[in-house]
Picture 1 (cartoon, rainbow, N blue to C red):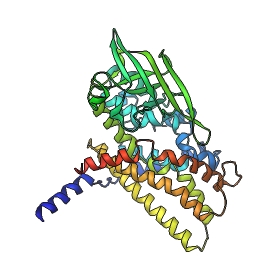
Picture 2: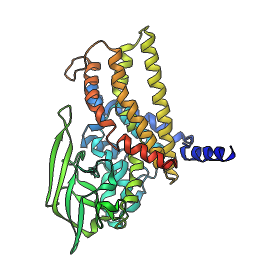
Picture 3: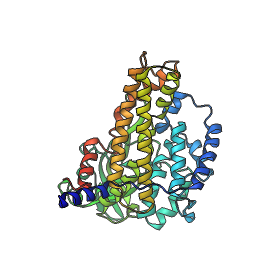
Picture 4: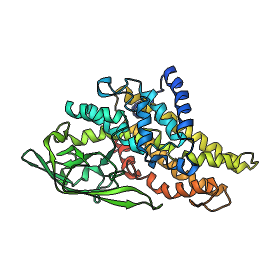
Length: 394
């Protein structure tokens, strides 16, 4: 019994989500962000707000940068503002909840910039981080592949060493905004083979505007929109100065990066507009079924927010949050995929993106987007494997 109790306590420690500290500056900032958004995105329709995750607007990103709301936690010498992780969380949370078009700065601010800050060379930091902080630099993620998907250890894209750098050959898939991006952080194999799994992988900084031998092909989603891409490298030359961190240490670097990608409020707020429209449509309803459904959704949303803020607290303290981040991502994807189905059960009308009724238009868009929620950032199977390993169950 004692051993069993000790095992449970060890598991509890691995599942612990710390409480965020009180932060008056963050709450004061919340009012400023809301006032800014009330003016800046006042003309966006509910359907446009539903597209927040994929809404690409460089001018909006530059406006955020001008307010000092990008690169918020970074050192001032790199264009940052040395503010707290929780202040940054407020900006992310409020822009998503309001349906702002965040896609042009999203990846760069969330994970590419922090990766360069942690592992990049001084030259890389000085050249790129101030641009991200200004909202003037778009990144895409070169991770998933046709034969690997969420199993990143099976990566086959290969960078062969040549004089002055590498020749890269391979294909990346589902690469969001590759057609718009200025840079990609490419996860590839610089030694060994796919059988080596975690060994021999590296990260390279790819200039998307000046790399020859690279082709970007569009992939349309279920809504007919172009966000995804296939990026093919055919002996593309990448200079040696593009190496991020240490050659062969790409796996540990990517795992550090994914903690940022998987834990934020985007994992449960990218469908927020649908919840707002649903609550508005059911306002005043005496249906016990509708009231119970909205109550459950609200409770789940609050719980996810609490867990996500706990991960932010861990990351701010420099702690390993990979298991907790995977839990937030998995639970968040489930919440967002259940939401449109719950809405359909409560509304006696068909979802239609072309509808003049805001709820039906937003429901139509979210319904077609929902399948991607359990793919982006890692499939359920991969995430649950990470969680099991983190808990010592496999």
